[in-house]
Amino acid sequence: MAEVLDCRGMKCPQPVLKAAIKANSMAAGSVLEVRADCPSFPSDVQKWCADTGKVLVSIVDQGGYKTATIQL
Amino acid sequence: MNPTTNPSMKSTMKSTMSKTITIDPITRLEGHGKIDLFLDDAGNVERAFFQVPELRGFESFVEGRRSEDMPQITSRICGVCPSAHHMAATKTLDALYGVEPPPAAETIRRVFYNLFMIEDHLLHFFFLGGPDFIVGPTAPKAARNILGVVEKVGLDVSRQLIDMRGRIRSLMATIGGKPIHPVLGLPGGVAKQLTEEIRAELKTVAADAVQFTQFSLKAFDDIVLGNKQYVDLITSDTYSHATHYMGMVDKNNCVDFYGGEMRVVDPYGVEIERFREPEYARVIAEHVEPWSYMKFPYLRKIGWKGFVDGKESGVYRVAPLARLNAADGMSTPLAQQTYERMYKTLGGKPAHSTLANHWARLIEALFAAEELVALANRQELTSPEIRNTNLKTPREGVGIVEAPRGTLIHHYTTDERGIMKTANLIVATLNNAAAMNMSVEKAARGLVRDGRADDGLLNMVEMAFRAYDPCLGCATHCLPGKMPLRVNLRRSNGESLAIITRESDGTQRRC
Image 1 (cartoon, rainbow over the protein chains, first blue to last red):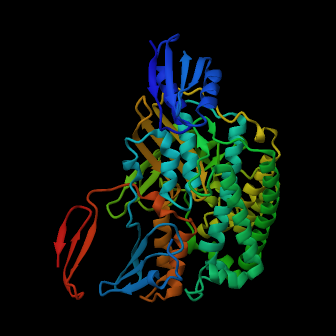
Image 2 (image 1 turned 180 degrees about the vertical axis):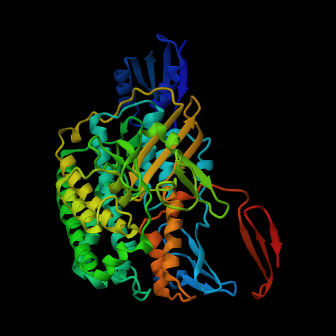
Image 3 (image 1 turned 45 degrees about the vertical axis):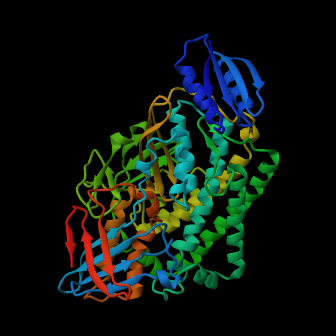
C-alpha cells in the first residue's frame, strides 16, 4: 500500500522537498505516491530519483495534476 | 530611506531647556533612526544615543512558516539588501537540508551576488554616503543628496552611473527572476540554468563594471584624497575607533563575500578567531539595551564591557573596512593594488578610520567586478547541473554571507517537516550597532562644543554612522520589555489634551 503525499498547490521546490522529507521516514522498498500540479514537478522528481537512487515507477497525468509513484 | 529633499521629512534639530539636541529623522540610510545628544552645563556632549525607533520583528513572525519560503520572506525585510538576505537564507537551507550545491549552482550564486555587491556599493557611494564628500560635509542640506552629486559630477557621469546600475539590475532580474526579491536560490542549488546568451551579456556588463568602478575610485581620488581637509577628516581621531574586525575570507585569507571561513582580528590585526557557519554562537553573543530595538553583538571570549573600544572590549566591527582589515588582501589584481594604496595612505593595517569605509567600499566594488569577469569565463557557468536534490531531514542550519554592509548570519531550527521553530538573524548593521553608537558619540563630542551645533556640524555627526551604510530595517527584530510608546491626545481642532507615555520598562506617565 503506497503512502500518498498531496503537494497540489505547491511550487518548485516544495513537492520534492516534501517528498524527500517523507521518504526519510519511510522504509526502503516501500512506495510513495506524490501528487503535484507544479509544471516543473515531472523533471524535478525525475532528477531527485536519479540523484538519490530511488525508482521512479511512473508519472501519470491525472488531468490538472500529475501523480509520481516512487519506490524507495 | 529618508530623503533630505522631501520637506516633510527633513531632519529636524531641536534644542530643549534640558540641553538635548535631537536629530530626527537621521537621513541617507535605510530605515528610521534618530540621534539624541545630551549636553552638560558647558554645552558639551555628555552622552549620545543612536536610536532605532522602528521594529520589524521578522525573527518572531517567521515561526510556523515553511523553511523553504525563508529566501522569499527574509528578502522582504529590506528593499536595499534583499539579495543578501535571499542568499543567506539559501545557504541556510543548504545546511538545513544537508545538501551541497553543485559547482554550476555555486558559480551562478556568486555571479548574482557580485552583481548585487557592485550596484549596492555604488548606491551608497553616490546616493547615500558620497554626498558628504562629493558635495561637502557642511554644504547646504538641500544640496547634500543625489541631485547635489549630479550637479557636482555632471550629467554625463550621472547617466553612466544610472546606466551601469540599470544594466546590472536588469541582469540580476534575468538570473534571479526579479531585481529585488529574487527567486533564484533553492536548497542545494538554483532555480535557473544560465544560457550562453546570458554569459555573453555578463561578460560585457562585467568588463564595463570594472571600468566604472575604476572610474569611481578615480573620482574618490580626485574629490576626496585630493583635498587635504577631507583626508585630515578621514584620519582624524574624531572618526576613529580601534576595535576588533570580522569578515569572511577564502583559503588564502583574501576577501570573500559568498563562501569561506569567518575571521576575527584584534585592533592590531592579529587573528583571534576563525570559524565556520555552525560555530557562530561560540564566537558571538548578544547584549540588549532597553532603549533600542537593536541588539548589540559582541565577542563572547572577551565579553561585553560596554560601549568602549580597544583590545579588552568585545566590540567588533564589520562592513567594507572591517572586511579588508580582517583579510590579508584581495584576490584580484586591480583591487589588490588599491587595497595596498589605501593602507599606505592611512598609515598601516588595520585602519581604524571609520570614514575610510567609503574608500574600502569602492575597492570592494572593483573586486566584485573583477571577480565577475573571472566567473563569466568559467566553463560550468552554463552547465545544466544546477541542483543537488539529495535532501536530508531538516533540523538546524546556519548560513553566512558578507552583505554590502557587513556579515549577515541566518540561523534556523525546524521540525522534521521543515516548519520553522526559531530564527536568529544577526544582520550586518546589528554587528555594528555598538560601534555605530560609539562613533556617533565620539564624533558628537569632538564636533559639538559650547552648545554650538549648526546643521553642518550635525551632518558631520551623522557622517559617523553613515559610513557604516546601516540598514536599520534589517536590524530591528528584538523587543526588550514593553514597547515604548508616546500618545498625543488632541481635540478635533488640534488642541492638546494630554500626552501619555510608556517607557520600555512599562512605566506609564500622563501629562
